[in-house]
Amino acid sequence: MKKKWNQSSKVSAAVYLAVFAFLFICNGLTLYMGDDYSYRYCFTDGRLIESVSQIIHSMRGHRYNMNGRLVAHALVQLLGMVPLWTFDALNAGMFTAQLALIMKISRGESGQRNNLFLLAVFAALWLFTPVFGQVCLWQDGSVNYLWSVVFGLAYLIPHIRYYSRGDTIKSGVQKV
Image 1 (cartoon, rainbow, N blue to C red):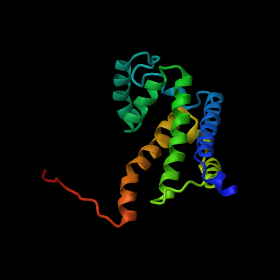
Image 2: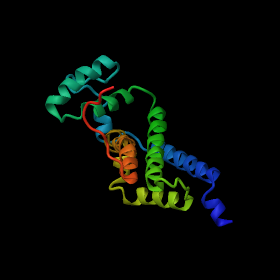
Image 3: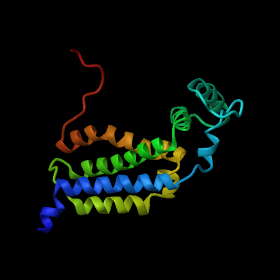
Image 4: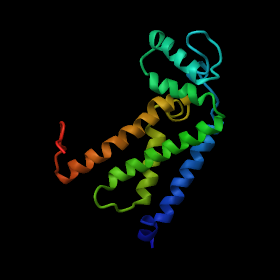
């Protein structure tokens, strides 16, 4: 019976839904802090960001005064213009996607579900992510770090698949 529960797709779906709901609530309870608040304002004139054209202008100033992470910070400024619950939902989805991608990689070619391991991976992410709130809940930290991890894992999946099968990845321009 335990094996049936451990490999059940319904239990997996319930765990992912519970993780999403939990992170959505955590995000909802996390107010703007530090950089989250700073990025609501234009880096060139200090006014509240209210349009996409202001973001472009702001990122021009950001490039010279702060650092070069323009795409991530422009996205933070764009998300600052929408209702906060929109970011909360997107961010909870990104954390859940991170968990799902880690599980996809860990299952390998067998594709066998392990719901106990899914819970263990969630617990490990919760416990061992340094400054979890700043990395996974704060808007600026999430877009810069959590979201980057999700995109990085998604990029790596086909490469891991090739490597695990012993295939090689063709490089360079291929003739059609």
